[in-house]
Image (tube, rainbow, N blue to C red; front, side, top):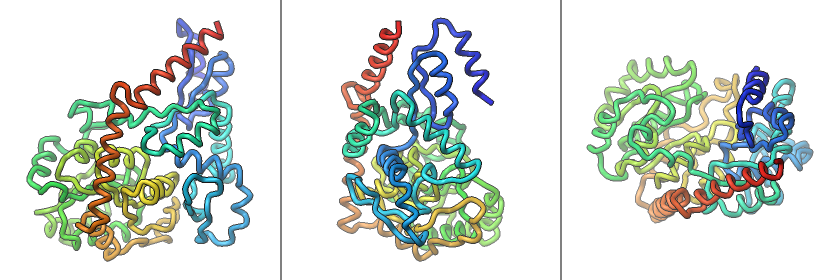
Length: 389
């Protein structure tokens, strides 16, 4: 659908582009780059931990056939750290059938034939995985993140691609009324597909935790049913003094950077995971699908900046009601306490994530690793253009 107009645009542009930088989900740009004789570089909105895991599993795809149960854990071979997954937890790009397989094969082919890769991460966060993924890509990997830090202004932070569903001043005023590090921020992404039964357990667990929280509610068709339950069950009335419900888009970076926020319950999408770490906020991990279980492993096992909610199964589309409740209200309450409490582990976790947050800011400042990688990327593109001419 997009290939023809994009190719026509390339024919009209003067001077001709020296390079294509495209999202991994646009494999047709590979053909355009080939037609115009220019390098194509992929932008990956994933971490190197996940990219390396996907690469290894593609090389050992037949290994999955030896795993009898979908609930059986296996260890990813040749990985810098021990990482165990079930079949349903590994990234989607290693699986698929029918139309899905065709799409995933196109993404895989685009990845294999690209000139290089840009990654939204920073070298100090996952040095072993950046190093090993660079080996896979013959050195042409540029870590330029966290890209969320390119927005320095408050309005940019608040909107981050969309207009927030809550007034910025109202949100800050609510946060200002809470003690430092006391608030748990909950956001399960734009396409949260948890069944209503699970969302109810999440809400009741938050209520029983007795901690102040901000809960962002948006997503699929269960949205309306959840809002009805929140009002009809008396939940909204019971938590009105310590709970803030945001219906729609939230000013996430603005919230995470506020001193009152001491935890982030996240679906582990990479943008959210990285934004939490960048803000120095420990994570309560609740992966749903895709690369999110990989991101959970990195946050909890490798970086040790997160606590697992206890989700074991991927929330497959169309099977949500069948899967049902994965974490009950007691499990939610326990995980919240582990994250937000004052145990030695919790204190150490907070110290680690704050240090990583500082390193993230240094990476994008002048002379930092990500800032330098952008310079190296531009130099490489210009060098390739000179060779062509």
